[in-house]
Image: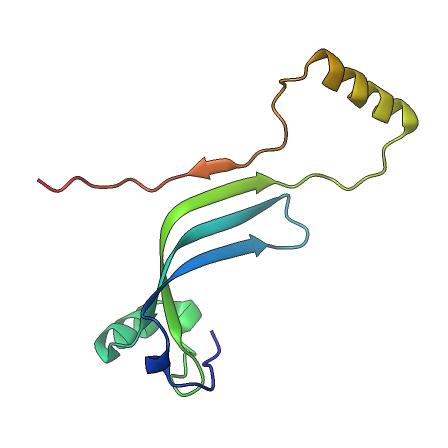
Length: 118
């Protein structure tokens, strides 16, 4: 991300993160929750920026690298925004009366595996 005008030492080294990934034209979106870390170790920066094509253009004078450890990821199927007819609205209302506990629009949640230390 773009480097802030303040010194990086003024910020917390660990902080909560919520990232929303959405791209127009795709029928899903993704929300990631976790902990963010500012990567400041020159060796770690070198390893990451030389091995991953997407960050080879990294400029440490203008940018800061944030590493995110995911604790939760929610996958959402996007709802089409088409207009509903009066008949469709009536049927939907009737179904909600008949089946009040039917599952609604909810995400699929993934939690990363936590390894046990012996």
